[in-house]
Image (cartoon, rainbow, N blue to C red; front, side, top):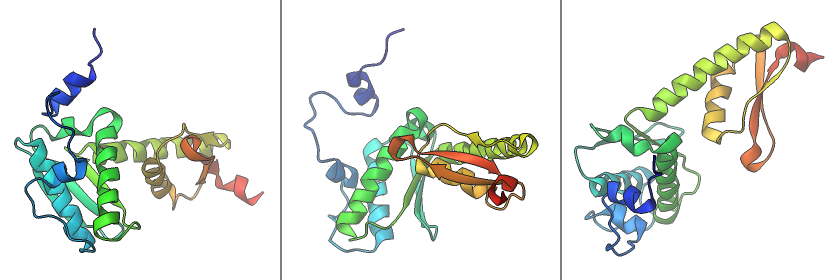
Length: 192
């Protein structure tokens, strides 16, 4: 089976070789009015995400909200789940771009953003929380810490939150950069 090449991938996104390389932010903003500097973060985020959805076309829907600790966008529609990309990498890339747009146009580099498509991240978070619970039981029974594979900060956070009030285990992130990973330890180990 042939591995899909970049041209095929871009064609699936509606971008052809003949297209000029667009400014990604301008392309995502689409026909929306240009962003003024220092707008409200939610306005900037919503305008950017509407441009992304408009650029992708089709039957996609968008809902944006301020969840307190982060600005969240949920993309729905028949093709939304395909937008997640491999292991959610496309969503991660959209989040990075949205963060950059917020820093430039809202003057805010402290705002977290989360973008989900077709419930991909919600399902991923549910699976991580279930994994955390299973590993907590295993660590509590064995009395031995369990080290997980390196994972992105958002995924580590899901596990930290899932186990933060657990009576028998605690969690800790260790390591640096891309090797940063999570360790689940028995609470008795912490008191010794």
